[in-house]
Every structure is written in C-alpha cells, then in structure tokens.
Length: 216
Image 1 (tube, rainbow, N blue to C red):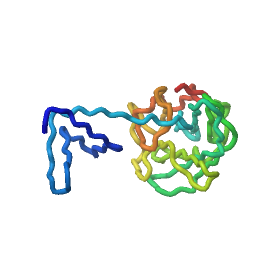
Image 2: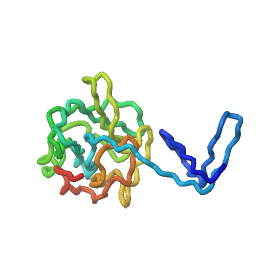
Image 3: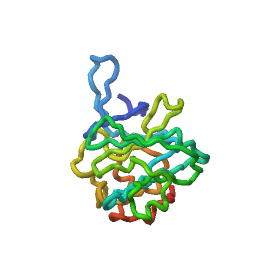
Image 4: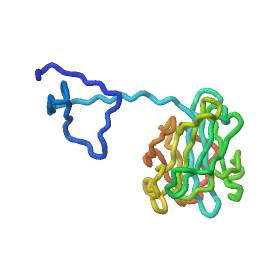
C-alpha cells in the first residue's frame, strides 16, 4: 500500500448487526487474503428517495379511536386507486385485511382512513371508513403501490415490523405503538420499507389535534 488514496465505490454498504471499527477489503482473487486498512474515511452518498404517498399519522387510541393519515408530499395530484393499505396481525406474513383507496389527493393534502366507531373528532377529519384501522399496537400496517393497474403491488411504507410479534407493541421514543398517537416528523418526505421509530413524534392517547393536515 502507498500513501496515495484509493477509492472504493459500493452500490450497497452493509455493516450487519455490529459495526466493525475497521474495514477489511478482499483484494484480488479469492485466495489473496484480507488487507486491513487503518485511517479510513468513509463518505456515504445516499440517492435521494423520490417523494411518494406515505403514512403521516397513526392513532391507536382508546376503544375504537383509530385512524391512519396518508400524506401527499409530491408536487402533483396522486391517483389513490394506485395505492392500498394492508394490516398484518400479530406477526403474520399474510393478510386478508386490504383497504383499497380511490379518488385524487392533491399536493400537500392528506387522506384519512378512520374507524367508523371512532369519536366525532376523528370522523370529522375522515375520508374513508375502512378496515385498515382494525389494528392493535402489535400489528403491522403496510402501504403499497401499483404501477401496472394492480397486477403487481410493491410496499412503499411500513408501520411496525412485518413478520414480528412484539408482544403488545413496539417502543417509540417515550411511548409505544399501542394507546398513543404518532405523527411523522416534518423532516420525512417519503415512506420507508424499514420501520424506524425515530421518524415519529409521540403524543398521549386520544390526541387528535394534528389529524387532517401534515407538514413535511
């Protein structure tokens, strides 16, 4: 090795569960062995995600006070018939709880799916009474999109961890996914298929003040 900097470019850099304090690169053929590089500087350049419909608020309140808010962060109208919401209960990886959407959602506006037995404050902001709100704090909610008229559906946002049963809920900040209201932070501009509790602001149970609008 020389003092001349060597640049390695990766399509993906995966560290696994534990991040090593040094990087080992396999140079040459398989039998060349590993070279340990010290004083390594890593520049991570992420490809910006394309803004698309995402879950902006999740209400898991008392009784049937439940609602999901979807936000359009794009610069144009979205055809909601290209989207649907699925609920996976108790760690399941298959579901029959599918809520199809319809209509047009303007830029910067929200679409609220609500439980038909919720309180008046939720219903007043609602756009669709649907089974997408038939969840508890340990159920995973997935937002999917199709680009071929419904033949193929692809997940574009997820709330919770698909295939994992956390017991009663997942922890989020000082709260949980059951009996709390969670609002997506303003810095989030698109959904994620990897559940990240740090993307959410936690409010006490039966907080409905933010429902019906969102800022990103």
